[in-house]
Amino acid sequence: MYNAGKIIIGIVIFLALITAPFWYNFGKASTPPKLEIGTQEKQCVESKAFMQSSHMVLLDQWRDEVLRVGKRIYVNSAGKQYNMSLQNTCTKCHSSKTKFCDRCHTYLNVAPNCWDCHIAPKEQEKQAGRSDK
Amino acid sequence: MDETRRNFLKIAGLSVLGFGAKPVVDAVAGTGEPKFEKDPQALNGKRWAMVVNQKKCLNAKEGCKDCVLACNSAHNIPDFPNPKDEIKWIWQVKYENAFPGQENPYIDEYVKKSLKGLPFMVLCNHCDNPPCVRVCPVQATFRRPDGIVVMDYHRCIGCRFCMAACPYGARNLNWRDPRPFIKKENPEFPTRSRGVVEKCNFCSERLAVGKMPACVEACKDKALVFGDLEDPNSEVRELLRTQPSIQRKPQLGTRPQVYYIL
Ligand code: SF4
Ligand code: SF4
Image (cartoon, rainbow over all chains, first blue to last red; front, side, top):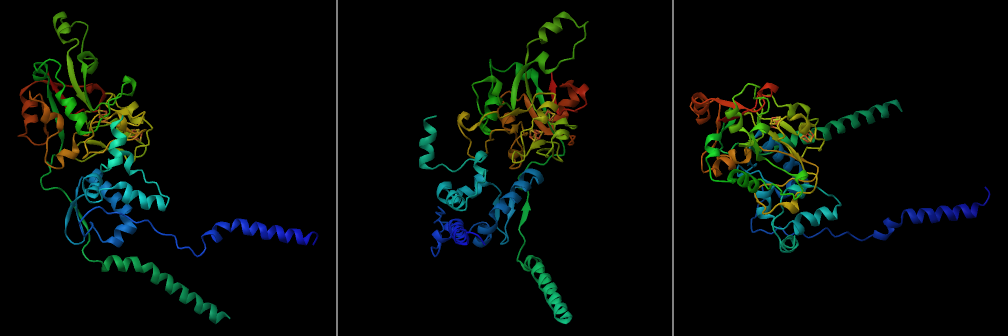
C-alpha cells in the first residue's frame, strides 16, 4: 500500500471527527428537564406512565372523537369523566405551557403545532408580549 | 448443522410470536377500557337548519350587528384591516347579491326597487348536498349525520378547493396569521392558523353542551331561528309551514339549509 502512514492517520482523524459528538457527551448523563405541572391535582386523566408515553395518541383520539364523532366526554379507565379539550381541560391543570409542554418538547427536539391554534394558558410573559400589539 | 438451524428457527419463531402477542395480552388484561360519551345536555338534532326571519331583522335597530359580533367573539374571528383578507362566518349582503337570479324582466318596478339594496344576513348554508365536502381532498370538510357541515382545521391543507366549490362565498382563507388580529380572545375556543380555511360551524361546540348558536342567542329581535327540521313540532318547521320562504341559489342543487322569510 502506498502512503500507508498517511492514509491510516487520515482514517484515524476522520473517525475521531465523526465520533466527536459521541466522545464529547461520553459518560455525561443528560439531565432531562424538570417539568412544573402547576397543579395540586394528584392524578392526570390517565396514569403518569401512559401520559408520558402516549399523550399525543390520546390527544389525537380526543380530537377525532370530538370533531368527527361528536362525543366530548372522556371516561377514563377508572371511570372518571372529563371534557375532552386541550384548552378547557388539560391546561386547567398544566397551567404553564413554557414550563411544562415546551421544556420537554424542546429537550426532545419535537415541535408539535398545537399552539398555532389552541390558546395557551395565560402566563406573565405572554401577557406583556400581547399588550403592546 | 441442519438440526441446530432448525432449532434456531423454531426458537426465533416462538419468540417473535411471544413479543408480537404482548400488546394484545396487555390490552386484554388491562382494566377498564376508556370510553367516549356524549354530554347528556347536548342538543341532538337529525337535520339542523336555520330560518332567518328577515322581516324582523329589517325592523331591528339601525345598523344592528349583534349576531355578527356575538359570532366573532365566540369563535375568535380576526379583524383584518385589509378587506381582501376578511374572515367572516356570518355577515350582511345586499338582496341582489344574496339572491341573484330571482328576478324576471317583467317584475314590478316597485317590488324591484323596494328589494334592491336590502341587507340580508348570510352564513354557511350547511347544504344537504355540499360541494365543498365533495372537493376537499383530505376530508378536512365533512358533513355530520345531523347535517352540519364542519371543518377539521387540523387537517386542512389550505388548497382552497372548497372556496372555489362553495357558491355562497361562505369560506375564507387565513392568508395571514390571524392571532394578532383577534381583538379579544375567547379562551375556550381555538383560533385558526395561517393557511387554513374557515367558516361557520353552526356552533357545534355550543350545541354539544346544550346551548343554541351564539348568533341566535344574541339576536334580540328573534330574527334567527335554529332547530331540527326532522322534528315536526320544531319552531323552524312551524315557520316554514306557515310562511313562504326562499333559499339562496336553490337552482344549483346544493340544497341549502338556511331559509329566508321575506
Ligand atoms: S354554503 Fe358553502 S361552505 Fe357551506 S355547506 Fe354549502 S357549499 Fe359548503
Ligand atoms: S382548503 Fe382545506 S377544507 Fe378546503 S378543500 Fe382544501 S383541505 Fe379541504
